[in-house]
Image 1 (tube, rainbow, N blue to C red):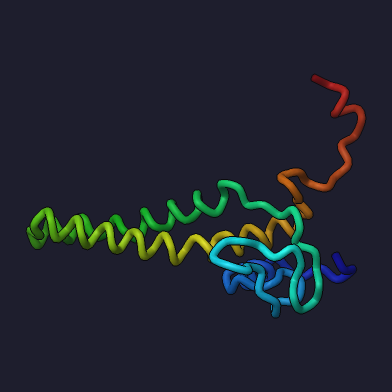
Image 2: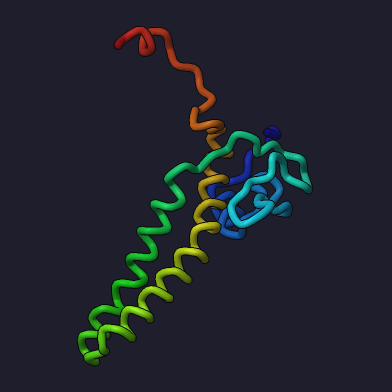
Amino acid sequence: MTDTMPKYSSIMRRGLRRRCPQCGEGRIFNGYLSIYDECPVCQESLRGIRTDDAAPWATILLVGHLAAPIVPIAVKFDIATVPLTILMVGWVLFLALSILPVMKGVFVGLNWRFNIRDGKPDIEIPTSISAKT
């Protein structure tokens, strides 16, 4: 990492745009969800940054809140079960597949900010704490 750390708001915006948390220019994905080892623009290392279950968790949370309002509308207008099921499945799949890479970008940025690589923060644990079991 460089000496100048971007603000949290900048890192979050860059993550939402799926861009490098350091420079904001380079793409962080070399596919749908695969992360580059380093930014193609500024060469900032992204190696070892994992989001594990954070991105799917946030995606499910958002999709659930965006899909739930359809149910009372369907009840009010008495929409048949088959068309409602087709509508809901299509809507939920579209939302989930659209939101997941965005959420992963946000969590990649946050993990980069806190220097969490391979699921472990890069911090020193005082011996008085680590000695306790």
